Image 1 (cartoon, helix red, strand yellow):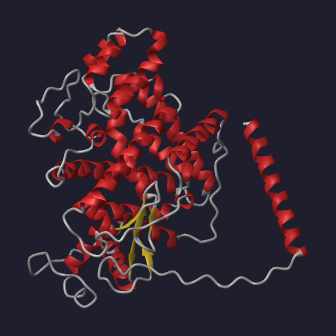
Image 2 (tube, one colour; image 1 turned 60 degrees about the vertical axis):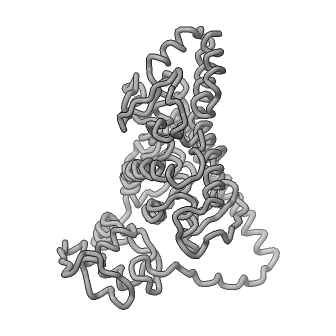
Length: 444
């Protein structure tokens, strides 16, 4: 506590010193007035394609659709469609069917919760200050945890401002079932992202103390969650684009054609809902760690130990968000709600991967196949079906290797080598080393 107080005191003095020096420099050297920034240009309203006035309740929308959605939610309106519940909604027809218009609002990602929060906010005095309890101080241990998680995230996932963005004209204007050129690039980048997520996991305090089986189960269960969270934090609303780690920037149509298919609008809606949270790298890293280290995953050997590792992560995120936004205590629970949303998107993502297998000309990339649940469903018909040293449960909730095989491996490795064996096993599972090589390691 004293250490943190001293650290904060020093930080304040440094900031004040820098500000004083900056002010002095500005007084000595007069600067020419900078031109006013250009007006922000938003994508057309996601509901009716009319001119957008900004981002409202999570998506780009016009004033008309914003007001319609707010009134519908606040008054709990129940509408009826007099046709087949599939009316076209645009700027001309939007007032003809309120039922279909509201459904369109939900489909593009407008958030009920955002309406409720907005209403509660207006009821309170804008100048009302929230006094933080005294216990909203990061202890020395939590401060160290936050720093390690933040560093692990930043070193495995560069932020948008660090990337040299570039674009491609490939199928940018119209949706097709699959653009093979974009798919090849997308699958290559996704494979690299998975490798970075494995690296991120191994840097998290306590993760490598879990059993090998539990490390693999957690990685396979949460990898798609973290992939989705990461790409959605690189969303640029003004252009309606997402940027990958090499700088490749795709618009919504190209993301659809690269392989997202029917999942595209759901992912973009989630990205829009992240914008009001204004999460920084530390919060994104902590939320990723919470997604990963979660004791309710199926087939864990030591779920209680996993829960104990997650508890300080939750506490750290709660305190960090409260200290960063003292007047917005609702931000922490809103962030946690995104974990549930991510799981829903990941479930649909795994389903999309099944249908994608029928659209691509060759096999699914091995690392992506290993990440997904029940990888046997991705095998070509020419495969023998022999799973060698591994057997995967067909239960959708079970996503780890057969625990018997893991125990056999550990029994043949000395305690000194356990940490190294964990790395070898992870590399084996995620980098598709030949089974013969693995057998050689196990019998060593």
